[in-house]
Image (cartoon, rainbow, N blue to C red):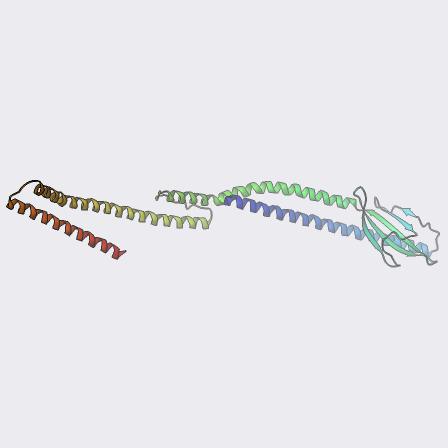
Length: 294
């Protein structure tokens, strides 16, 4: 996978994770604050009803144990029961509260407060308040945050893609220059007009390396040219005496020569052979000198 795509996908993953976590924490914090406020309000209202009802009991009023009425909150109701509707036992002065889920997804907050009658019996004041709107608000908030997060991710994704391509473009040009340099184009240089200091410094280092490689290749080409020239000259120097030696030797082999001519040809062959020996000694000295310098 290309480096630009790695940057893009990594940044998108971090963005989605951070936005999702932040949105969830924000919505959940708002939900918890609202729920706590509504719970406190419901408990306060239930306690106020308990005090009112306790005052009526103290006045020895005749009350129905199945009293049910609204107390000004939509969906809220209160009633006095003879049996404890709360799962745990409750003593006078205690209170019980819980959230109950209904079959249709509704949520009800139940508060149970024990009451002691003048004759020593225990009655239970039960209040119920509908909390479904709080949970619906949380679901709507989560859905809205998901939509907002999706929009932000789309916009940010486009910006991240453009930024990642822009950030890695100098690396792509540097890789292309390195490939051309490896193919033999030693004049190729990487652009140094990068948007980041690191890639600009990398391009400068690459260009200095390319300069050194080009200089060394020029030196190698010049050395190869000199060697070719030396080999050509040496071959020419070898060819001249060899031609003479072969020619005079062929004459001496083919024809019957007079002693003066034979001696003359032999002397010529000897001189040319000595010349070849001198050339071979010079070549040997050059080879030994080159190995010593290396």
